[in-house]
Length: 251
Image (cartoon, rainbow, N blue to C red; front, side, top):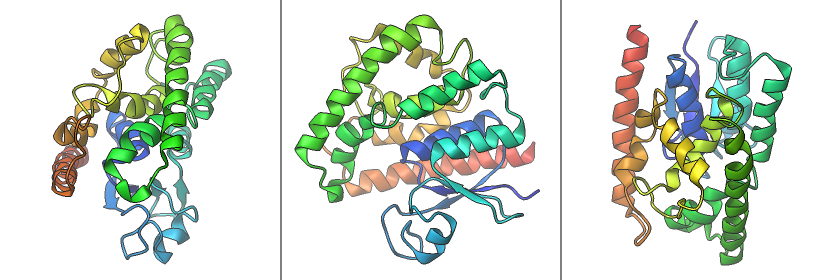
């Protein structure tokens, strides 16, 4: 079986969630860089890419052997878990699985707003995200963190129970990026259970490799990163990715 192809860029939060799952489950894959929003040959709006993913979004996963492709991070992750029998991260118990699905549906317009309101405006100036949209996103995120802190993570160690699931991977790539050791753009100190969970998640296999792009980018709270800084962070992430892929293929 030929390794699946993951289209995207390491800096993308949803792409990182899929990468983390693949690393965690030690599944070899090929990474093909796709420039989000571009209609160029390697862009997400190119005719060739739109044939695979009509929505023109990243990530997208393709199986070279069959030609099957699927977009949207959560759909990709649940497809991989179902097709590979990864019931540790996507339980076959209907109620436990429902909790994972519950979070994955909740994620958008809540936790996902960490990127819309705090990270994207500093990194993607070309998006011209209105201040009103940024402010609304910050309010949504704050409310979501309060819900996670007083509910989900008060009841269990991880979002859907006592072990890491797809829900945790999806949530961490959004919330975790805000931490002082990464972008440092949001104060997480009011949320004790969230902070405890973040610390637990740093010990999940693949965490450091998936987040090397953020470690290289550094603190952006006071000054937006230059294009050179962003390019260098992506280059470093790709170096780590290639090393990890070689390790996986060697096994």
